[in-house]
Amino acid sequence: MSHADDVSSLTYEQARDELIAIVAKLEAGAATLDESVGLWERGEALAARCQELLEGARDRITDARGGTEQGDDADAGIVGFVPADDTAEDDTAGDDAAARPEEDHS
Image 1: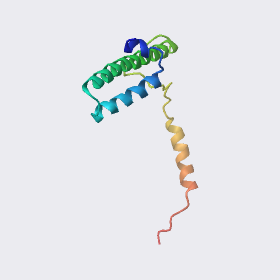
Image 2 (image 1 turned 60 degrees about the vertical axis):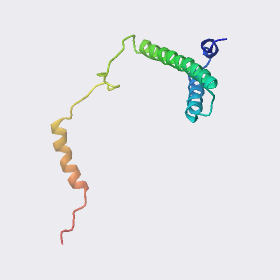
Image 3 (image 1 turned 135 degrees about the vertical axis):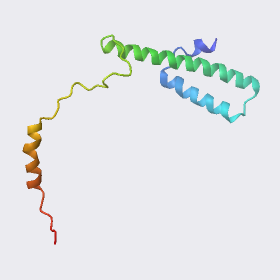
Image 4 (image 1 turned 90 degrees about the vertical axis):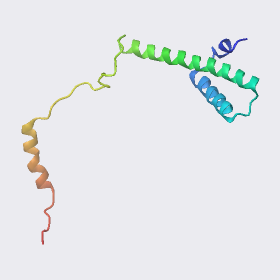
């Protein structure tokens, strides 16, 4: 069985966690050359599985948003902006001053 066949049923979290463990083993440097190559191959298959699942999630989000993919200039969920009414600011300025206790300047 190839590494790719073997990872096809893993969830994103399972594949990611196993990939993290493989990276730690490779970084530790305790594996033989043959073991390291096998770990590397498994890691490549796991990384491809993670990428496949992430792309699928992105596609589902795009579909849920109406089928249009937005770029970096998206509004990040801001629905609209209503500018402050200048007259409302003037009305509340006096309220703030009245609500504050007077300072003792002595």
